[in-house]
Image 1: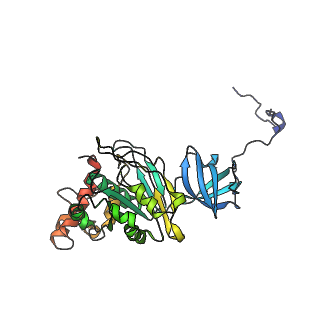
Image 2: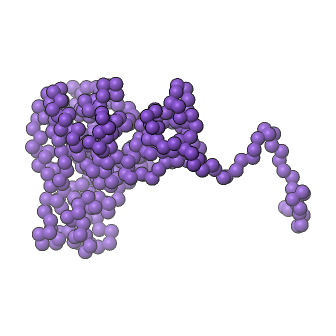
Image 3: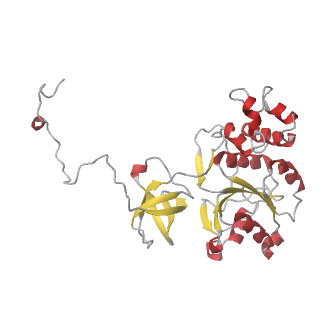
Length: 336
């Protein structure tokens, strides 16, 4: 039913009075050209701790960002109170494009991906050689997530005083992943700390691993005393560590040597979000051989052109085996 006549004038239209006396809402948002640049250090229940210049500022996400969430490592633009004083709150109005992301899903059947860390240069996959026992399937999954998200992987093997690293190094040797081996005695003396720090210098490195492998202990050895986090122990019955790190946190290395991002211990690492076509890019010696592959090739089927490429001597067969092992890990559980 037409409320107004065919030739209505604007004076004929009833307008609802603004009872609050303030300006009506508009879809035009301010540009915030004077916003300050910052980096997200931690996220805790809607409150984000950010570094702005040399100040630590508490902030919240602006409503206009919608469902887009800021994560640890994000470069953001902030307005509001940037003094960093107690009980002050700034507002994040922009999130810069990310150079890399570490993503995972709860399991392989979960379509909801979670961005854990943004803008990290490398992913340090921390694995104990014993107490608890190493889980190669979880290492494989972390490697796939690193390759998919644009991070360079680094394998950190701890507790070498309890077991030898030879078996794991042989398993991952064909991948050419950089690695460092540490022991408890070397951590206490500082010898292992110096070796690890050389691999982190000038980079932002996210540390990942399941609980009890010594991840937070290593991070504490790398950072200054006032920035250290609490650590736990391994359960003698289950062989699993106790979660003591409950949220990701970016911590600066001394003397401007880069950043480390300590993440909570993981017990599963879903790869539902991973596109296999992006994983092959981490194998530059194999990627040219995929030109003859059928469309949507999984690189692990009878018609895959990589078999002939390797047979002709263009690449090491161990590399193809490693690629297929990583690609198939999406269908396997970590404990398999």
